[in-house]
Structures are given as structure tokens and as C-alpha cells.
Amino acid sequence: MEKELVEFVVKSLVDNPDEVSVNKVEGEKSTILELRVAQDDVGKVIGKQGRIAKAIRTILSASATKDGKRAVLEILD
Image 1 (cartoon, one colour):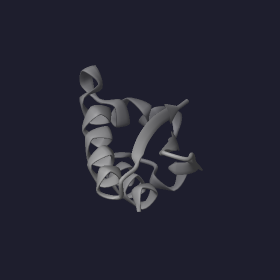
Image 2 (cartoon, one colour):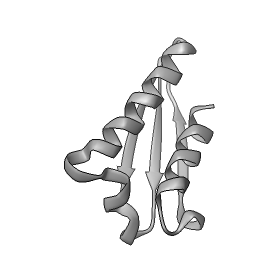
Image 3 (tube, rainbow, N blue to C red):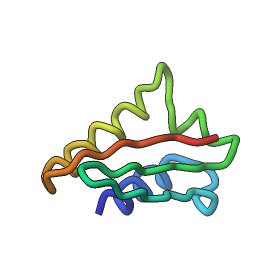
């Protein structure tokens, strides 16, 4: 669920939605989502002073907490 949520939000923000990829790494108590976007779109995903990235992480955290897990979003370049 979290992977699809992040994909949907990020694809709505970027200019190159075809280049968005989310890799899910499952742990025992947490899930790590590795996000890759086109080089030109990294700034759009992070936002000014990291506000957009923080908002995405907040939504992700709320979704994961509902399932009793912890989720971490890593934005890779």
C-alpha cells in the first residue's frame, strides 16, 4: 500500500512520471522505500527547505502506522 501511495503522489508532482521508480525493502519492523526520479525532478520532490519531502514522509508514516509498521522514505539521486 505504501509503495503505491508514494508512487501516486510523486508522479503527480514531477514532469517525467515515467522515470519514477519506488523500490520496497521489507524489514522485520520497518519498510524502506527507495525513490528514484529523473535528475531534473529531484528538486520538485524535495521542495523548498525539504517541505514536500517532509509532507510525503508524514503521509507515508501515517499510512504505515495504521498497519502497525514504520516506513522510511529515501530519495536517491
